[in-house]
Image (cartoon, each protein chain N blue to C red):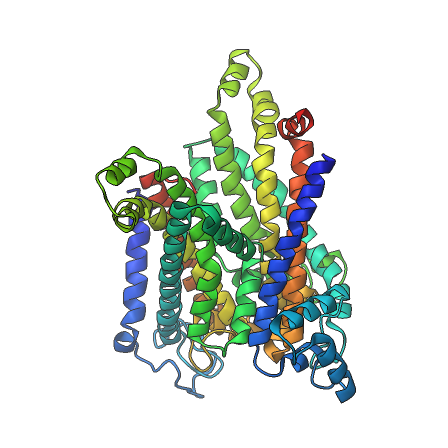
Length: 310
Length: 265
């Protein structure tokens, strides 16, 4: 286990190297002075000089890259062109809000998606299955910024049930969470259905049924348990789509998180903000995927025992 | 093919036909401001109503559709082209080249896709070409990975071995024998991916990174009109409906093709 974890952590190094190279390249192609685009134009000239030296903007690309990574490691993502605040400090404020929204969406999406997938798979070929499948393919096709606006129109502007926008406690969180959850429910329903149908066809399920175990017990104990591994993978991978969707959802509902921060950066062409959000989002996704890999060990005795036997 | 597949082909054909003949069939100029008919609800004069500058929503939706659909298609073909080349080459050649290309693909896929597309879009001047490049630059990776996986299962097949035995050149084997085996997979993925490309294009336009005003696209119409959601919901409803129907048709087509060719994705 320890060996596996160590190996998995070591694999992060080339990945982070790649990610920073890519964002570094993007920063280099950005219009304008790369140093100014990192520190912001309002900074005093001597600070610009210092960063320029630290970055080594006059030296080779490689030295510049090393300087860039060194700054990132110090949490120096640059300063916003407009507020002159450190992007990193703002990210620390906005990140928890995005996490709240993501968690809210997951709390809705995971049970609903699993349930609909299970329902669809158990009733395969029936009307229920067809309806659930059509709904899930529709859910994949609806843009969140549109469904968000319609949800807002219905629940807060017409029915006056919940506030239309703003950041705050749970009543502000409900509508954006539902919006963000819709595509995730669709994905999860589809994957759950496919996975379960595959497992239904396995010999051990037939054995369990032949032994006379109750159908509900077979479904939950034998089928669903074995479906957990692929499902955990999907839930983990889908974390990226929550981050993607957060940009649009937070913009619509005025939720003060990383997504709206990105959107504001785009509107004002505030490049340090945009790049900071991209790096932060990617690092989060990488860490979540790491967590999923570690979770495998606890979920699947086969992997665990295989590691032990070596 | 399943009925849903045929229906989606018909829908896509109809939407494309309406959008691409828009300059001929639309009674109004999509960008013409008419301050006498501001925020009119759908009526016989303006079937889908008008926006806050009195422009006809139907004309704007159809004209915007030309851009949205073209971008999705071109980005799709670019992704497939690059993905197919890289995937087939990487899988067939193997060795260090394969390892390096796969590392690059893993790297691209480790980003949240939409955030990376935003990052690529902001470094170029905003416009339709930027959106195409951004979508394709992120999109080719998933094509390449799946195609490579498929090539790995194909390349040891007996018919490849026999073509090698009768002296076919590597290039011939690659293009004439391996690549056609990937076509069903490519078709299915293309259907499913085009659905999401329509959404990505709309989302980038929504964020102001696509075609610039006054040119209409579905995403930018929603973004520009969202302040009027309460007083004039049709201004937001119809462009979004078009995005949803188009994306849904591509997704249904992809599903139908997947069932037809029995491809696993």
